[in-house]
Length: 138
Image 1 (cartoon, one colour):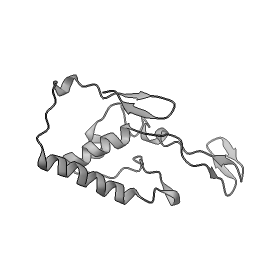
Image 2: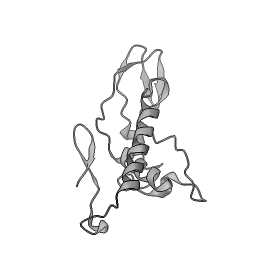
Image 3: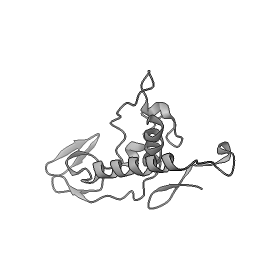
Image 4: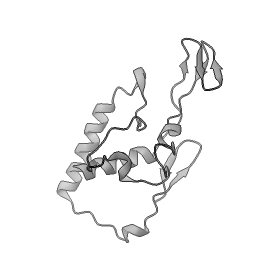
């Protein structure tokens, strides 16, 4: 099961289909780093800035399973992994989406033997940045 989870987390972290989220309004004056954001200011959260934080992920453009594993090889939760947004306005369908992904990949792996037509080492999955998000180059 860990393999299925790691593959899923890899793709959710690499692919940000649309990096533009619903606008939010600041409900009170907020000091963020050296900036003052006044009450009523419209902000657009951009989660790729968190998903590609090089302090949490030393090589943010490369997948390293160790980002999601503890010292004993078990899955660990990371506050930096937020493909469904965060806070009070988190995606209402997140749990359904995670269950659907699990069922989808599990049924494929149970019913088919998957092999790449080329050597897996030759596949470049480096995401291509665009104005709307990042998609792996296939």
